Length: 288
Image: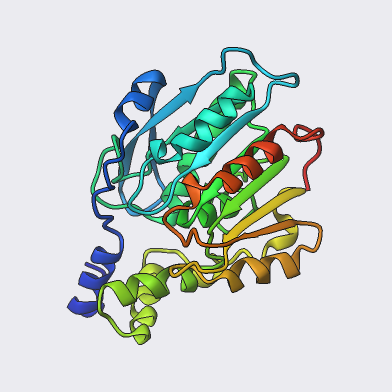
């Protein structure tokens, strides 16, 4: 425990960092079995934690011209294979896909996770792809994973070199940590004022939660930016996507209806939009 930190704040922080078990969805096991699995080790990011994370690769039967490669970042309490509909659509379009289970999620080790560790895992997977001569041409992040993905692409906020990728798609993504925390506090039956306790513990671990904000780094996000959000999202308000679109008027903002938050990765309009974005001409060029 950090010196001087009240027991209840520390306990709340530990609850905040501990994801629940992901829902088991039909086809998760089969899709995972179709992938080439690997592991990566995250260390030196938070306290003395060492994370062994599971990675996945899915290769298309017929690669598309330009060798597009999408790296997928799942949400809190989820796992890589929850991108099943997106993965199947992308590989059918000739796109290579890579993903990982965040610490404490899916087949990865541990029981806790954090935004810096998830962002670092993404950076490590993208670096591995680049070393193999098959770099990522797009990153697709969902919910909390989208926030981590965006921050992984910008300098200085999270220790380490930013991931350089030409295109970023954010689905149902909170634009800052306060937004991501709001819904969790509601579900935990805690007052919103306890957000200050969480940020205080985070700062004692060497992180400034106030800097985990995509609005502050909007200009440093990848040159091609797609924002997908449902108007009726009851976990992350649509105003988050609209605020980021206002900061990045060159971004494409597509709003859906009737899918809420949890069903976005299964929604046909979302799958079609992501596939078109990743396979679009110019997807592999430039970086903002």
